[in-house]
Length: 113
Length: 110
Image (cartoon, rainbow over all chains, first blue to last red):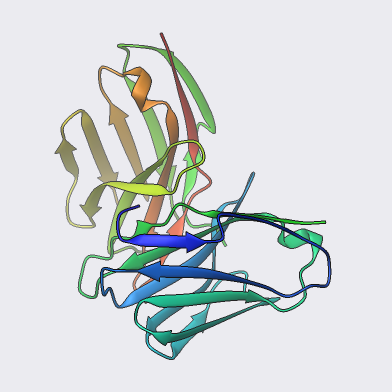
């Protein structure tokens, strides 16, 4: 978890409310990723970033948006949270160059009631 | 869609025994990686094997890759209680993304 923090670590929110999760890195890595982890599904990519203001969708991007205005911060926003977005969210970072190895944050457990 | 499919989904062995878990994938890859996740924690990178390699060792870990069968295996020798965790394979198809399997949950019994 060195060099990567996620906040908050736990959050309970109500259906329909907006939620923003923050990923902060001190490694100056180019690539940042948001995943969700659910039982029976492993890790699924939500969005990723390949530079400041450069982002792209992953496998399960519906209902989520992201922003990256600084190299060190990657924000994940649930515009209107739904119960299906109850999950554990992980941020990962990766330096540029090959091969692609990812380093993960500690995770955020989000419960939407 | 999931690229890596792991087998078995769960494995329980006695301390000191070897643990083998398998991963199958569907498309061409640049490399295949294995990650470990302890309960309640983020994933940790263990080992990477490139598409032109057949076997790789790191301490008690041995990884094999068979690109003709699109499969890989992770062997943990002389298991310890601290090896209890979930293990995930991840494939690098390019485009700066990894695709993770659903994982194998390994329990080491004392």
